[in-house]
Length: 172
Image (tube, rainbow, N blue to C red):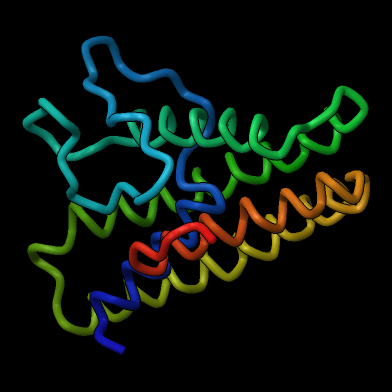
């Protein structure tokens, strides 16, 4: 697999899982990305109408919107709120971890040696692996507490998001 594709895949999965930093509010005057349900913000990607790369605050705002949409899509009940909170917090923690790596990579890439480039990709892949385990640990009890119809819906929602992240596959 081409290195760029590997990085894109890792970033897509990581950002889906928890793309962004703690729930910081965007800086005043920051232009926010559109409320997309697919795709991801990659390092160095410009925010619409802005002349600078996305920051942790713009990533954070996207994550908060993603958390809200997922909460609605999964039909989380008041009885599941505590378990949901644990899952959402895991997404935020993952985002915080990944933000630092993605921003550091974006800022350092122009002067990285080939070995530093590989190390940076390895750091992102390792963080992604840790983050996915954290996410699974937080999601498992929530999933177990779901009604059968919620589980079927969660399966469909997560599958569709994963298929889209693989390159534009359509919901089925």
